[in-house]
Amino acid sequence: MSDEEEKEKKKPGPGKYKKAIKVNARKLDDAYKALGARAYRLYRDGKITHPDLAEVASEIDGLLEAVEADKTALDEVMAERKGTKCPYCDVKSAPGSKFCPGCGRELPLPSELRETEKVPCPNCAKPIPAGTAYCMHCGKKL
Image (cartoon, rainbow, N blue to C red; front, side):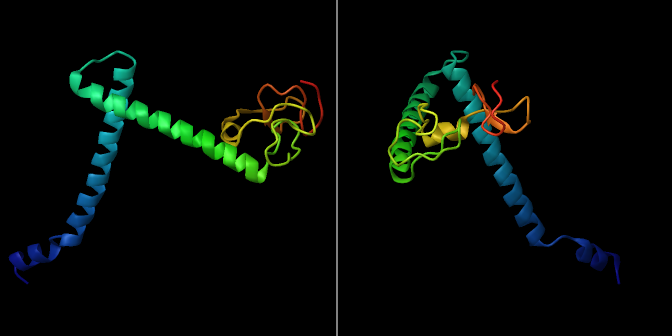
């Protein structure tokens, strides 16, 4: 086999380049998104100002408000359909309940439940919602 034939044989096929292009294009998209998010935060915080950013930042603000409104509406629909499990005492409430039938505390909406910070109980070390007065697992007053 000649040297030229060996070089041709060792040369990567088009699949390798297509894959590399796809991977790098995805990384480029991620970098653009990260740059955009950082520019938006800097613009929102008043650290950078530019007329070109005002229109896009305004659109982002509107979209963020729409997402929050949709989350609230979804929470209300889900709470009406399924009820809510109390994060303080683990009792399930009837659909549409605003207060827990077990402990009487106000029930958070489903999205608030996902965002509730959990801390370990100092007595039994099981996770409990932050700010809880009693551990729902061992009953110890905190």
